Image (cartoon, rainbow over all chains, first blue to last red; front, side, top):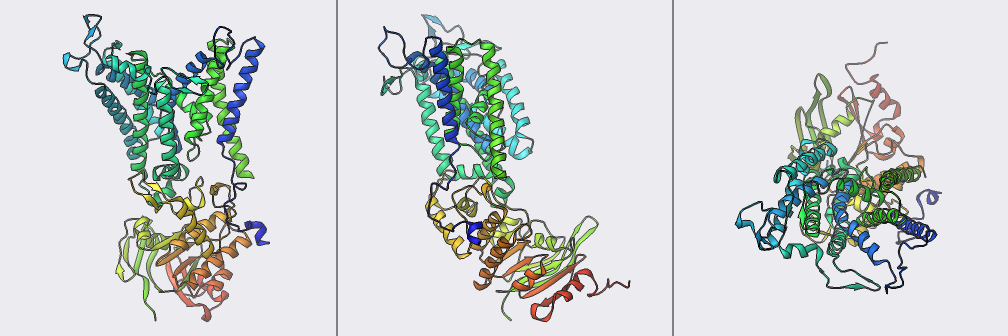
Length: 370
Length: 255
């Protein structure tokens, strides 16, 4: 009888007994949504994914894929950091503003002295800051993100105020920094090298089977960072402790984990990732504006949540967030492809975010009851 | 008599004006299993919280393994060799069994600060070993413990304690929320500890269990130790008399 209650006691690894990874559900949803948009497009005589023009020799709709991937890549990089913050049971509302502030500061160190034979009309600093090697703005940018992340982390870990409030404060202040930096003026005309960071081809004219992506450096960076953090979250102490803290912070502390220090580290990494996004975004647009990154934090949180990251902490994964980002991007492109008005797009986007959380909670309840 | 592993002298804890623990003199010998019993609010849990340094005592001495100790927190107590199963489970629900067992003392393939590479295989193997020696049966150790029954989770918690126990195990009502079979399983783990010669303090309301498992019974009443009785020299009625105050000193009822 004891066997019936406590199982067979067989301790061999049995994949069948292991719960199916929730990421598969997200992947299923992604496929389903793509399929729905393909059908809707076909009903209008077009195609969502495939090339329908006779004069172009391609199987896929390259232009749409390019846009989708670019859309997902930059905010997706932010979402990688936000995912880690949510997994430890926190939240980061500051990332969009950190992108804005970092963009302004970074661009000021990336400017070129002469524009079409004239001095740079948008110059922020004197000659000393002109035509610096590209590594300078990159390092400055990452440092900005690191500082913002450290402020978030230190506030959350040591003042014990709720992460929502702490990062809300940083969100407002960082946006202030972005506007103050050049009195609201855009900062433009970067060096040529800086412009190629996002627009150049890190992988050359690389093709993936049937697909080729010129100028998709942000996507390449996104994928590399996603792999890096997937490995870190899955195989290292950092990941294990992140899940432990999000799952039961008191238990984690009792087990000897320095939870405060760990939180600072996680928020710092999220800040640096927001800065990476800022560098790519300014390089892509060849300009920085104080309003850059508005609402990015919410889009990033939405990607994580759609990807199955639980807002109560402890559950979710980088893979889930990448899939969530893909769903997010497919939905936006999908609405455009069926010529749905932009206003409706935002309404539906909101509904999908709420729906994803409701679904997650419903699943969770079902599991605890069973 | 064998070596003394834990001794408290005049251990006292006041919460403001409340005297939760008053002049507790307690001795635990090597390999000995002692039960701490008493009514609600008698000071049992307070006593444990002072020994494990979850709280800091008001006054008195704690001598552990021959040395006077002043642990700054439960972590230091654990590092010194005192493993505790608390009433509230100290487990991370979203982690699997090996991760919970090794939480805070992970094994590594190579060390690199916070990004040290976990040695998951060895931790998993050792977990299975630990579950085997403690006779805990868990259907699949790779699932998050969220999906397990209360009993299984308690078993994980106790297996963690038993697996790492070096000098002293303290269990605060380990079977309070468990069913019959699960209670039996936990009791088997405790017998396993006894066989391995690991001393234990068991807090329990269950006198049947106490008489089954331990060598000596210490009775708390109103913050004081009112009796310390060898199992063979007492019985349930006797213990209840001490718990309720019919026997044992100043507060004998005249009603």
